[in-house]
Length: 139
Image (tube, rainbow, N blue to C red; front, side, top):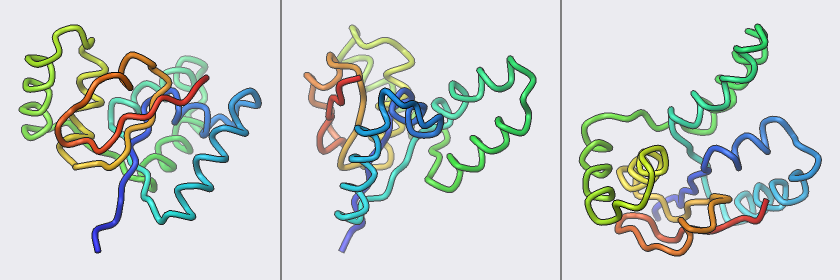
């Protein structure tokens, strides 16, 4: 049986890693649901880059290392030639989607995720071949 995968967009990942009080109940419920369903969590190297900006800009290398290790443990999708092809297909079909979101979606497509969690409502209104379901989580 294939293990299901859930892709976390950058903001969802940031809420969880930084344990933001305003978003903690929602992200904890997501984590609990995924555990109960045996769904693995993945994200992209782009998300990792985005969450590293704050600790690096503040000179906090230890926090940056901690974030990086957490993301690598959960599953970090690199952007290579398969992802580039998926990006091109997505952007050609949906030119209204901005490049950073196309990168995220392309990484998810290239790895055949079942769920793509985002706090971007407009992404949840589109269907992308290769992603089971794009789910908007209110922020």
